[in-house]
Each structure stands twice: as C-alpha cells, then as structure tokens.
Length: 212
Image (cartoon, rainbow, N blue to C red; front, side, top):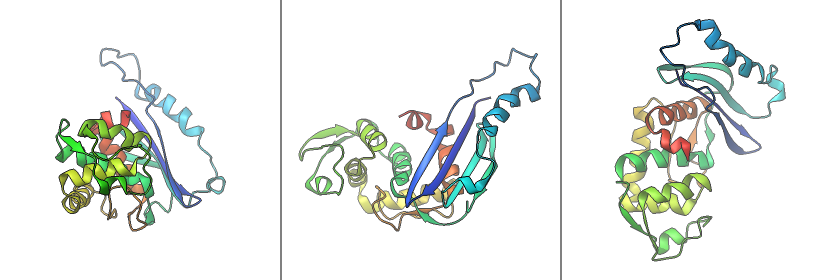
C-alpha cells in the first residue's frame, strides 16, 4: 500500500505545496502486521501537524491522507473550497496536459514569443531546440514560465489551454479554471481541495512528474 500525503495552502499571496511520499509498500507476503500496525506510522506523522488551525497562516489549505487504491481522506482543512489564484501550481496541470498530448520526443524550437514571456528562468535562447520531455525539468524544477509557453505553443496555445481545462474537469477538479499555461495570470484559479485532487491524480497516473 503506497500512501501519499499532500499539504496545499495559500499564504501571503502565494501558493505553496508540500508533499511527502514516505511510506514504502508493505509486501503482501508479510501477514503478521495488523491494519492498526500499518496505520501507526501514519498517525505519528499526522500528530506532527499543528493541532490548532490558528497557527497556520494560509488562507486556505487541506491536509489529505490519500491511498493509491482509493479516494483520499481529509484530515485537516480550512476554506478548502474557496477559489484563489494558484500562480505557478498551474504548471502541474501544464505538465500533465503536455504529457498526455505532446509526444515525449517531439522537437520544440524556442521562438521569440517564448523568450518574451515574463520570467525567462530557464535561460533559453531564441532558435534553441529541445525535446518535449526535457522541457519538463525547467517547467517543474525552476517553475519556468518560458518552458510552459514553449510546450503550449508547440501544441497550439489556445487548444492547449482548452485541453488543460478539459483535463481538470475530467478528474473531478471542477472549480479549477485556467487561462494560461504558466500561472502568470491572476485569473488562473483553483481550490485547495481541487489541487489535492490534481496531485493525487499525478501521483497515481504520472508519478515520474511528481519525481521531478
């Protein structure tokens, strides 16, 4: 049983995501452990979270205990259904959409439009060419806005953003709405609960993206 915990919040105007993939799978051949014994390490971790919500400054958050074999269970939350700008957490959806619709070995050339994107954190130069898979690293490791634009434009920007919104709706993140692939727009909104759903989907279906 592989367990995944996600902690998502909004504080001081910026979203943050906390994830911890801690517990190794318990081999099916080991039968001496009871269900309670399996849960004990989980309980110890849960006890490390603040018990008073007043100590958490995030405007909205959710602490979720999720299993790869079933729906997640919320352990602690506040304003988890409140819409808020999600900034660069948008790139989780960008990565998932690119993985689904752009072949990993597709060659993508960096255009002037990509270079002009605010926040050229990947240090791209116009005319450089990368395969789509390699663009996932600056996208997720340094939150590269230009990598997000390069992926979106290689598919067709408008069509890509439509695919991003279709994806969130298809997995049950119904309150998520996106207008760009990088999160630069304040109109990219979601909820803590929806972001937990997106992270759980990625952990189950695209674990290599979580690994980045």
